[in-house]
Length: 502
Image (tube, rainbow, N blue to C red; front, side, top):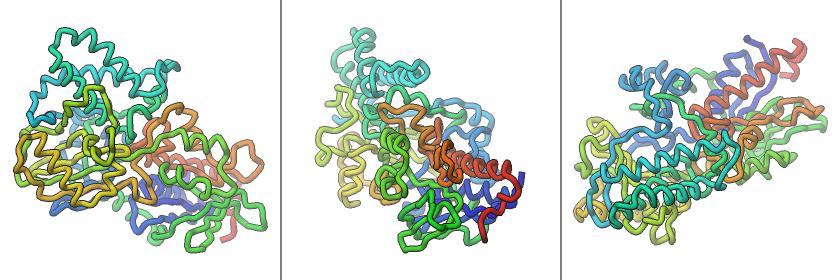
């Protein structure tokens, strides 16, 4: 229902959740909506860049589960931003459970190209154990506190039985493949180690059907289309927020004041905070006055937020097979099922599990995207482009056994050192539960309070109970908080519809 609402709504952050909240509110008749954004651009962690003539994604990469239930897919289709293949019923009907069936190539640290089929025992066992990791949240019991320990103990037991007749070298190689797969999972989860991902909460994440797809013209096309439908002047850029003062009791006409770094104070009836969890973890104690309730603070601490970075590497010619979609690198000294390196400064590059092939080659040429998570990834950000290029070049020469391979261009992301993001995306940490995600999205003040309700609302990927870490999760949370305000005013008496002076 459309309501003509004079309530002043300020949205902190112009990422996809902030944009979708504004969109929803404006459509519902709220005409006093404003977004304040710390940086000079919209989109947040949706960030498209260029490498030579190629359009590349510095941030969000895929639509995860592109099917009818996915609002990002539906918008992208509506705006005509997708390749025809992504729109076929076959693609939408494919349920890959969050792990697309990529055609792999594999190389070992002694410079051998491995037969990918030879790694099937490890890859299948890993997939089975990972699936089982998701089942504990529904049982309410966890045999280990974290996913890493569970995987290692299960693989150890199963290998003792299933691989007892395999020779020692092959068996060792299978265990090295498990290490590589653990590093893949660190990237997928945005965690330093799978030992930091809570086992009980791991299964909270839900995947949607559909074969993950990309935006040929860049993910930012989605942002541009959504922004074009908002009234001009609604966003103030380069305007960091210093503090959200809520529960104002002194003679203020509105219950909330948003204090900006430049000294501007914006009066509001409602503030929707959409900042990344990484930023909240670092700044929550100064960002809110009065401070957040204890249970909310504890949930912010328990939820995980780590770093996953990309290193794009372009070549004159491919050193991988034509049908190859992902490249796995196996370190032959890693048969202890590890996903962390012993010394970050000297061996950070070992955390890079390998590459995905950026396809189609007709569009991108010979382009790979390397993936690296965790503290090793954060250290990589501090190095010069030259140092990163050198490390990647040496790595590829070692694993292919070809000393002449030279990348044409290299570009990496640096999400940890982005002061407004402080990492990549959220995951359920150890000791985390659904209650923490519910605490994250709970508005202030608490329902029991006598003060004006819904003063501070929370959106963003880390506030979605089962699509955390995704763009569709972020978008849905922005809509959720807008709907919370719309239903509040729809059920209010007409006098409240203009409860603040213009």
